[in-house]
Image: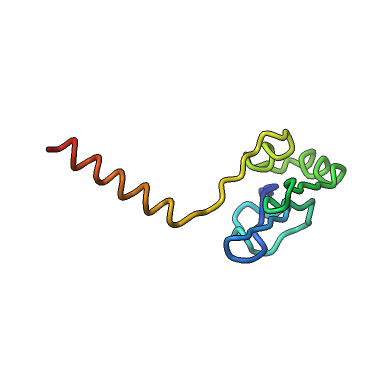
Length: 104
């Protein structure tokens, strides 16, 4: 059984908070987990990130696969991109207009 250390989403819609968890790789994002290792709250100022380093190290020593998001959080290089449906829709419309303009 392969184990991953990854983020599990909790919190309200458009106000996510995440748990850093050890979970079997094939489980769903918010499914059952083996152990909670820490938390990440991108909505607080400053952003809150806490992890139990001993638990994290023990899972890594056991061969757990660490996701890019978690490794970037630990390294301090993670940038949270909030979901903004209006911006996505606007970008899609702009791309469509540019495609039409280049075809003309």
